[in-house]
Amino acid sequence: MDAEKFGYQYYRQVFSKTSKPFAFIDLDLFDANAAALKQRAGNKAIRIASKSIRCQMLMSRLLASDPQFQGVMSFHPEEATYLSRQGFDDILLGYPIYDKRYIRAIAEHVSEGKKIIFMVDDVNQLEQINRVGAALEVELPVCLDIDMSSRYPFLHFGVLRSRLQKTEDVLSIYQAIEKSRYVFLDGIMGYEAQIAGLADNVPGQFLKSQVIRFLKSRSCKEVADRRARIIGALAEHGATPRFINGGGTGSLETTASEDVVTEVAVGSGFFSSALFDHYRQFKHHPAAGFAVEIVRKSSDGIFTCLGGGYVASGQPGKDRLPQPYLPESFQLTTNEAAGEVQTPIIYHGKESLDFGDPVFFRHSKAGELCERFNQLHLVREGKLVGEVPTYRGEGLCFI
Ligand SMILES: Cc1ncc(COP(=O)(O)O)c(C=O)c1O
Image 1 (cartoon, helix red, strand yellow):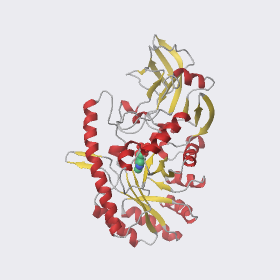
Image 2 (cartoon, helix red, strand yellow):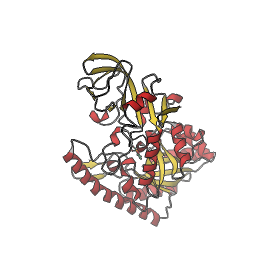
Image 3 (cartoon, helix red, strand yellow):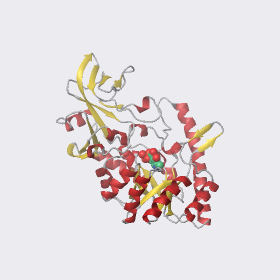
Image 4 (tube, helix red, strand yellow):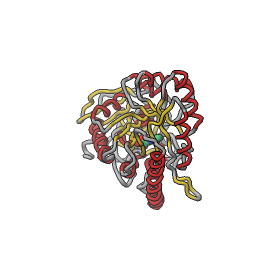
């Protein structure tokens, strides 16, 4: 990446007439990320994880750009029906739902010929879906979420989600699917969060990064064996799911190398939010950012901006704060960090900053940026080329 081209003066010039705060996508970098992600995914299809984009137009753009992008992984049933109404198809609910109203709304789309797939890991969810299917007389597709975490004696390495851990658990729920008149098995998903979502090359954390790499390499092997074993056992019992989904931005190389996997899920890699900066296997470009305005000069080298406190979800820590981006090498203060209305920054660099100047940050998570802004300004080749609404900008708030 050309540091000069994508530096402070570049963006300052691009946004010289834009009121702050604002969020933006650099399309040159977004497209470069999409190309790199396709390459990393090898010959596997890529399902777009919508939670990490939350902007309908950017997702349509990706899907139209290359047949390797196929389908969406949705994070909420109302989002799934919204996307379906907008013309999207092959929408996999990434997480189980239980509310009958939501199941019914989706079932209505399925009965009209749309492909929206429910996620299940428990017979209780399955029975609920089957009851709705029976009431509407429509067969509903389900995907089994298989636990891909690694369990070590003193460490649960992965997320706490699915209860389907062993081959027997999966076969038993498969039998329940077979006995249910109104559901059928359409896919299998296994999300190895401990590989896909855990940075392993963090500056200043050499030892921790080494340990994580070691755990990851052990877990990768185990995950691949488990997935192959479970898919093999299902096949012996006559199951022929249409797709086998795995992974996320951080695990593309390893997930895509598994023969049984037919598609990978990718979201965060398109924006390449700050939490994805420190992986050993890849480096994507910072395609998304936001800017706040300098409104005070509190003292020498201290500039205070309006807004900025867009903190990310997950385990609290410094890495969940907005990450200082441009001008290079400014810092947040320890006491205030990124504040709800006022964010002081410390800067002694070469740019001369003044009232009204922008200060650029990156959100540590990709999709959450869009919950803070109604639009994303689009930049290409040093010019503003438009703006697109986020979900929030369309009045949509799902979670
Ligand atoms: C089920 C599932 N698959 C895949 C992903 C990967 O998404 P991303 O590429 O944004 O890390 C996630 C993210 O949390 C997920 O929950």
